Amino acid sequence: MTAEVRIVPPLPSRADVVVGRPVRGPTWRRMGELHNWLLGRGATLVAGYNPASTVPASSSRSFRFYVAPRVQARSRFWVLGLRKDPGGQFGSDGVVEVTVEGQARGSITVSNDLTTNLYRVIDPIVTPSATPAPIELILTNTDASFEVTVDWIACYEVPAFELATNATEHGVELGSLQTQAPIYAATGQGPGGLALAAKQVRTTARRAGLFCWAVDLDDTSARAVSTSATPSPLFLLDPVIQARRITDASLPTVTVAALMQASDSGTDARVAVASTLAADTLNLDRIGASSTAWGWVVGTIEVKPEALDNADGGPNGAGTHETLSFELSRTKGTGQARCAAVCVVEVP
Amino acid sequence: MTASSEYGRFTGWADTILAADDPVDTGLVRDGVVNSLLHGYDQAFQTRCNWSARAAAQATAFPTLSTATWRALPHALGTFPVTLRADGTSPILVVRLGLVRSVGSGTVRVRVAWRADDATPFGRRVPPAIGDLNAAEFSLSGTSAGAWVGSASLTLSSLLRSTLPTTRASDSAAGSSEVVLTRIDAFAKLDSGASGTPSVCAFLAREYVG
Image (cartoon, rainbow over all chains, first blue to last red; front, top):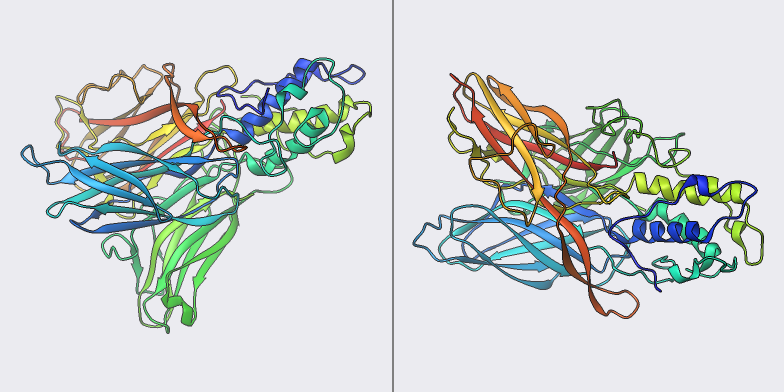
């Protein structure tokens, strides 16, 4: 028996835990199975989006994301929507090489059928971590004649099939949660170990990636640029942010990261963020001499969470959504304020 | 829906409530451990797609539309894994669609449909009927510089399992995990007398425990 992670979660019944009666062995077991499922099933890292980007012939494009992974994940998989342009029925298939965090992750044969096809790329995680950090996806088009259009990018963690029963992964040994087993407390074992490990659910069983948009830093037709002190929207429509309900007393916060640069040291750049329902604001500023290098600027903002008493979880009733607005502006100088990525994540 | 947990939020408890050889305080276990595990379940469902184009030029246009046939969007709105509910069924998938249409008149209809990734593809011109639980229809009249045209809740009955490779933490042994992979396709058609082709400029697909 191990700290197995199932695809379907069992639910312990509240009615099985009644004051004055012992908690039955099967109930402990179900609690342990649910606990392992919550920590091990994996999260969204990059919610699917269309970068509206192209990879020129014999060139590369780099997409940088700020992600909040789970330490329990050992692999993730990318979903890439690629189209060879203009392939035509007489052309050959294209080849795109995929690199993640400097590791070659194989080649994709891009069909010349003139349509966008979705390709899955398995990406073993070199150093599992729960620390929010940037990751870089590089797509290299090896065709010398034709460009490749990137119509979709997404990344999801591959669920774990078994957790380690240690203080890092917090898996619980299911064999220690049996009928007539003694109450004892050891890391990852017994009801005591479960009670300790279950505290991780609040921080680990997150909706890790809520929104991501990223394009190549040097893709002048795709990145956002402002030469005005008047803020202009980064997106045509404000993205929806559906955060978890943590407590009743306070609004949850989400972490917003923007990859920004100013074209010269006398220019400052700002991404202003505002939540519609929670009415909170956040300014992400890239200022000073170092602003001429691309860098992540990170902050937090309150949002209104999911409401479990509504049919679709809408925060203010069915059909309602919390959204974040993003506006780019130049707050100082005469150069360009630039932005090449915005990511919204829930961090531990 | 009704929350699975007793309090609809996370609760705390002392580390020592289940110390070795101590009797179990069932009230603390119920209010703390069971409640938080069940609330964690309610909140474990993920945002799978969340796209908002920077500008109309970066939205995805449908092929030239007619009043006679449905036409599919040139790319699917993602392949993504689905979090299964405790009864083995799909969660509710809340989809929200944004459209832009710079020229045109009359009403354009857009149907989005959810299916298992390995299931038989929809015909390029034959979306599921609107009465199906895995499809929803939206419409846009006249022109728009970009607008959300509505949201809908979908469910999926065909949940085909596949496996993805991964490794075990304790000894790095190779293995695989079962997943349910699905995808969304979009189709559009003009009403009688309408003209003008829209583009999809935003799309949300988020799971909800339901």
